[in-house]
Image (spheres, helix red, strand yellow):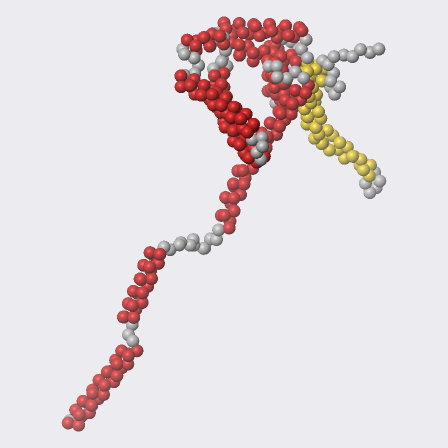
Length: 347
């Protein structure tokens, strides 16, 4: 009778790796001879990883590492959370008096909105769905705005305690767990080897740096997932396989959104360049731009045109004047002729 073994893994996952393979195809030519064509094809193969369940010995080693790292930080001059909070208390606290009043006012406003939401839910039981949705959504929007402001105050307060001895020791201990729990596995989940090799903390950390410098995409992705998963586990936010799977799914979604945003940013400059080029090609070379004339300019131009017409009329002689000039010229010629004849007769 075989006894069942307990699961030795907290979580297992796989990452695709690009692999180049040679594929050969054989065919016959016209003479009936066999011809073999070999080409290189890039395919993806899954690489399997696993987060090992920690043993009692590992827990002892992790606690010892945390205590040693904490004492090193204190000796180096880092303050503990208690020392830092005491110093701020002596100085009047982390928040100034106006900030304290605003912080208390926000909490009071949030409390009143929660009561208003409860009253609205009771009063709108008989109301229509559209009216109920409108009233409740309005209250919920106000509550979200107040919550965001409260979170800003709390995050500003928590950031002050980031550079404490406890926080430094905690971050280094998470790295200690990453270096000891990360493993490569096969398809069946059998452990092949520790992902960062054997040895103490410094030796494994050196292997971590070497893998990071090599830059293999599937290795970098595996290191990123190991860090996320083990951080959630260390903080008590992931203990079951289902909880790890939800985190894994969220990480993949975030990665897809980042890739989509990068693609959109890369496409926007191309579209802009094409739009800038299009008008330049379509613009006619000889055609002058049309200028709209205002009413004032139109009146001035019309008056100037009328004035020029009158000047032309004054300068150019009419038909009557031309006829009068011709008649006068004829009469002068006749009188000259008559005077010449009289002179000849007297002579």
